[in-house]
Image 1 (cartoon, rainbow, N blue to C red):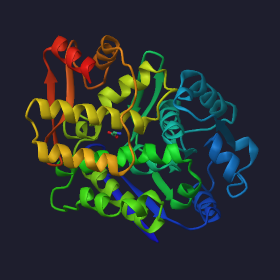
Image 2 (spheres, protein in one colour):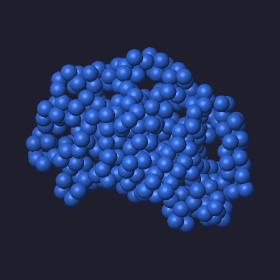
Image 3 (cartoon, rainbow, N blue to C red):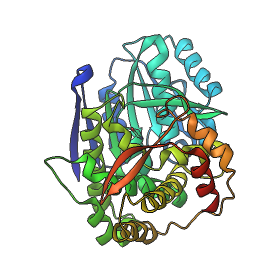
Length: 363
Ligand code: GLY
């Protein structure tokens, strides 16, 4: 099983490959050594991946920084530790940082790479489903503050992405489900993402749920390739999220607010996104942006993957305040990506906060 996808971003004349395979992890090690030959390296490993795979990826100790797992680790303190290591190892722009882990490792490493000496080479090796289908591609890098998720960050593309499907075999179940949350999102926005190359992810997910839930690598490879093809189409058209890329944020404005509100500890990103999407589907139905038939089909797909409603007693004032800090917001306005038809979404502004808060409190 081997496939290479390419992403080109005309806006900044950037081109890179995404290599997908299920070769033994040792062969990934060889690929990384070849790719980074004659350059200094710093490898930022997620702790779980390091514990499981350091024997298969035996980089010298002085090239390694192990990052604890959890969104709360994507912070200023760890960012500075990475920067200090780059300085200590006297790394220059010609050298390279490699992130091996999930979205947390990829985001913080990407941000360090983007800012160290105004930009050092960077390779993404995503090891979770979520980072394979989404965060490792497209160049979003960031760290969180207590007050807001991804509030310090920039767009900075990696030089390439290596996806080895074997990592999915050891991914813990909750993290795997978190990735599926992001995968379901693509099914609800696919009409915005594929122009001349329509693939029905919605149907693929409906028909193959048992194989996907049992992590059949053959189906996962196809699934990841469909999601990434959508993502590439979107990023190619709008790298800096001025328009089309906003569709990738379906469920995220509410989801990020919930993650921040619960201090990044209570829910995985995918759980928060599923919560946000479920609410926004209800909002879309209430406002007649979608019909009942599509609403039910979407909710059935979410239920098919075993996602249950969260039992969260949310403070609606706080959630709405956090939504105002969202990066898609304009001062005093909340803009949300909302389903507007079968598998398509559009941006809508919430004009009446009080009405929205009352509605949210009733859910
Ligand atoms: N994760 C959403 C994006 O890359 O734009």
